[in-house]
Figure (tube, rainbow, N blue to C red):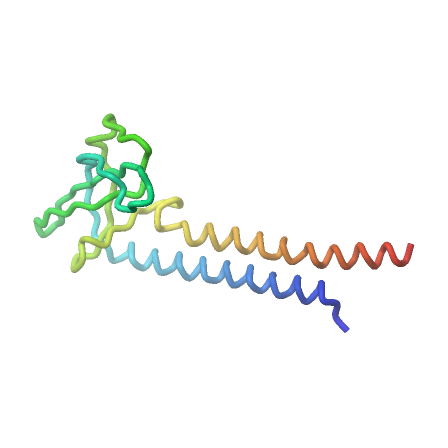
Length: 147
C-alpha cells in the first residue's frame, strides 16, 4: 500500500506538471498572437494616476498611431510611486490586433510573451517541492522507528 506522503507528493507533482503544461499553452497562444499582430512604436506622453484606486502609483500613458491612422492611447503596466518626467518621450513597441487596437501586448520574457511560461516553470518546481516535504517527513519517521 502506498503511503499518504507518497500520494501527497504525487498529487503536488501532478499540479506542478499541470502548471508547466498551462504555461506552455499560454506561450504558444501568445506566439500565435504575435505572428498575426501589427506593431507600432508607442511613446510615453505623460504619467497618470494608477487606474486601481487602491494604489497611489502613477502609470505611463502611451500614444501611438495605427497603420490605419487611428490614434490610440493606453496605460502602461510599469507604474511608479512618483512620476518620472525623464521617461516622457521614451518609446516601446506596441503589438495589437488590427480590428481592436485597444488590446495591446508587449514582447519579451517579462512582457506578456513569456510571463505565463515563467510562472508555469516556477509552479512546476514549487509544487513538487511542497509535496516532497510530506514524503520526506514520512521517510524521516520510518527511519526514526527503525533506529
